[in-house]
Image (cartoon, rainbow, N blue to C red; front, side, top):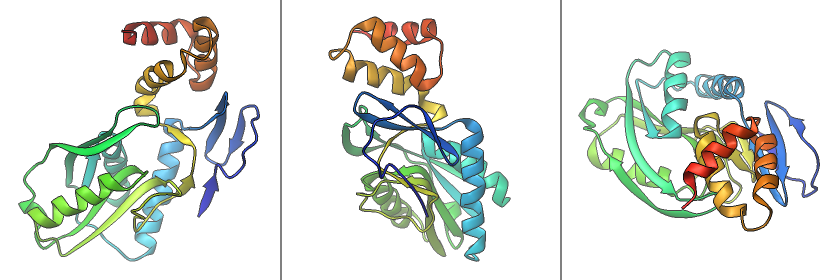
Length: 219
């Protein structure tokens, strides 16, 4: 298991294996590119196959988990991916109780080996809810879980994961959402132009695009 976020120092941009650890003020972030994601999905797939588990269907949790599930299905040669919509985040460090907003029929999972997939196990509540939904709506022969990342404080440790980190994770599929949330959280602590500059450096996006994103999200 690789770990990130074990040091408390504030430093410049630096490499940390497949991703980059970056800082903005006192906040720490793990910045991932699409290439990073592909590499980590391949590592996750190796853990699954190395354990001898051969899933016949994958359940991917919307939104981020479905990106991971689709990539993983390609590597593992699993044809069926079932999307399950559960939402919990409302801000950078704000979480609500998980809300199920898309629950498909799960009869196709009966008698099959199933892999439940998400991007991260933070508190673990989303994965707990998903597990209960699957086992309550179907009878899989076996159900295991896999994520790219876990947080040290999670209450749900999946069967497979790649990296443990205490940093806030900036995924490539939610870059704009991260910008909006960070703007709302930090705009009261520094000038607008300075924050736009810092956010531009943080996510590797030009200032004008950052300005357009955060301006559109302003109340």
